Amino acid sequence: MRQQYFGIPLGRTWLGKRMKSEETRWLTDSEQDLWRTLREFLWQFPSAMDRQMLRDSKMQSGEYSVLAVLSETAEPSLRPADVATALRWDRSRLSHLLRRMEAKGLISRCSDETDRRGHQITLTAQGRQTIEEAAPSHVNFVRETIFDSLEPSERTAFESALPKILASLEQQGLKPDGC
Amino acid sequence: MRQQYFGIPLGRTWLGKRMKSEETRWLTDSEQDLWRTLREFLWQFPSAMDRQMLRDSKMQSGEYSVLAVLSETAEPSLRPADVATALRWDRSRLSHLLRRMEAKGLISRCSDETDRRGHQITLTAQGRQTIEEAAPSHVNFVRETIFDSLEPSERTAFESALPKILASLEQQGLKPDGC
DNA sequence: GAAATATTGTTGACGCATCAATTATCTCCT
DNA sequence: AGGAGATAATTGATGCGTCAACAATATTTC
Image (cartoon, rainbow over all chains, first blue to last red; front, top):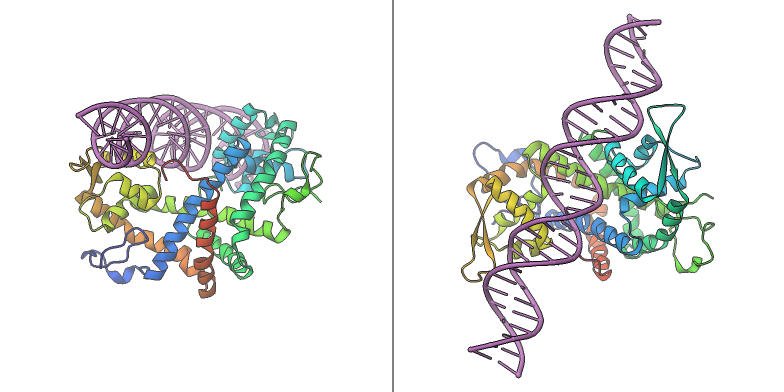
């Protein structure tokens, strides 16, 4: 049988002397099928969502996320660290994005008087209008591609499985810097 | 109730006159919960996988994919278009990556005599060694984070649900250029 | 209260993905 | 045969994410 490195390596014929097959639990054929599908989903879905948002709202999905966090909070303004925590982003990525969003007029920054290391981020009127206009087509995309595709039992399975996968990611110690 | 733009907009109070609420099927509370979790998964998983591969194999996951396709084929060499089709990538992305991989010595390119527009891509000995060494830790990561987290019923649900989601993405007409 | 340490946020460099434009070659059609 | 259009692959410009390094300010510790 031919080696299968892509889905995930299957064949063991190539295993050299320095590697014992007991050390690795290779994927079965059906596990490989699922992995290939999942990998395609992980690639295609965010890519399609970005394209939809750029087409319909002239926006990147990261900007939408920031606007959403700002619009949902009860506070009049938030600090970058709060937004970063809410989105589980590292601070550097957020800082770059906030600079671009400020240049576009979607948010405004002013210095925080209580903690002068930080800033206060505020949604501008234009920022609020932007997300209000972008929201309907976005929810439409998510509903049509995700929720309309899922049977109730499948949805339940997603609800129970995804948090477990996320928890196992935590254990891997592979988080980015700022989280 | 406060607006929920992130998970996906929930509130309708902000809906202005130019937009009728009937036009958009907003998400319910429990749908929003799932969407937030899915969104985090879509972000965290590829990011953690990239970090694992960079840490353990000094490689980007895209390079792994290309090496895998080349190593799995029965042909001695492939054309870029074949690799692009297998991975569902656009040709431009692949072209840039192949240039970098050739510079690293992972693959070699020579011109195709039967169709002189194209090239033949071949896995070098170093390229084969690289993927063989990278494979065990990669499969380990996938098994520990995905398969060890899934109950049999959840796995079945993923197997039936993901292809349906992918099919609905196709219908959206949001594919990149080269696909 | 002062020094050590932690935290907040920014910046610049770099690698990668994406898009539009381009070149070279092939195929089809008359 | 010859020209129109399709296809293979590359290139350059641009924007974003990541990382390491840094500056400014808070907090902790003794």
